[in-house]
Length: 464
Image (cartoon, rainbow, N blue to C red; front, top):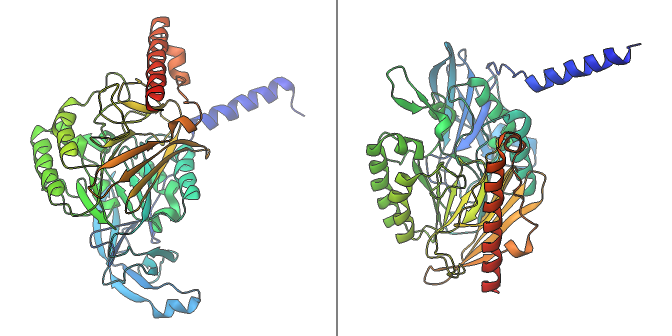
């Protein structure tokens, strides 16, 4: 029987080991792993799938059939040849494979699996989009980045549990912390698991997906393009980091803000491409996603070069919603003068969110109508002909934020803000900042909080 001191020593050692959190090796085998869906064709008639194996698998295929409750469907599956890409990561050769299922029927459920004919994935179901404007929904995640397997996993799984009939998954950058760390990518794919095999993913790179090469130049992770299958309709040199997708009456535009902030020529090239994408847009709704916020939620993290180039286009061409990450806090609002009614937005609604556990100190700027600090969140967005319904949830399931945009026949939006009906905002500082901030810094935060609270109370009285 252990003495009390021995037991305490043992528990302390166990706790220390738990805090170290050794990561798994994520060694590839002949069986498909890191399977993820995406698009490189029309959403109503095609579906693309990407996966990884070890280097022994040199030829792969996908099997697809209209889904049926009978297992006899397996014998009816059509085989489609996949493309294989050899990638050397950390001195080890792995193979990534992608298959493009084409000539599918709109609004139809299919079953598929991928492999080499001997080593197969499980069968997955997906449903093609409709070939006309129709209601749909998607999930949006801010930065995952840290403790992905242990803590971010509850964000994507909680989001799926909240809205299981969702059509798309959107990730606003910083999926991982170290751009070329294979085990971190392994954790990201493990956290999403089979959800990634049933719901297509759209993702943009953040600053943590970029790294500095030996020549001093910065580029996107060696993992990025092999790991995803994304539209290839973006500007030259930004393949699969900037692109757009039209889905049932909504144009979803993904931008590479990190690439733009590293190089003014990339910023200008991307802005010119975006101008054309916005001007020639037949869709009723327009949603933009990128990593760096147009309006930041954290003090000292202003992206003025990005904002000055992009925000005027968002306003001029009727962007409805801008989804962002980077600041590890939560903010939702719009760029309108204080005191002016916010019920009739003259520009997009801006959202900054965080889904992982890394937290910063929030700035509580004037553009915000709802804010949060030190809380992991995910968002559900439901789009129909005349209404965009947005809801943000804590990873524990409680609704934290909600609003609706109601679009009239002329394409103008009316904002219905549900903030007054929601729980009190969580704005406490993360424990790390409570420990390290000086008394003066804590006082400055209290002053910002009081100013923010007073402004919100004034806005609430004005809009009653």
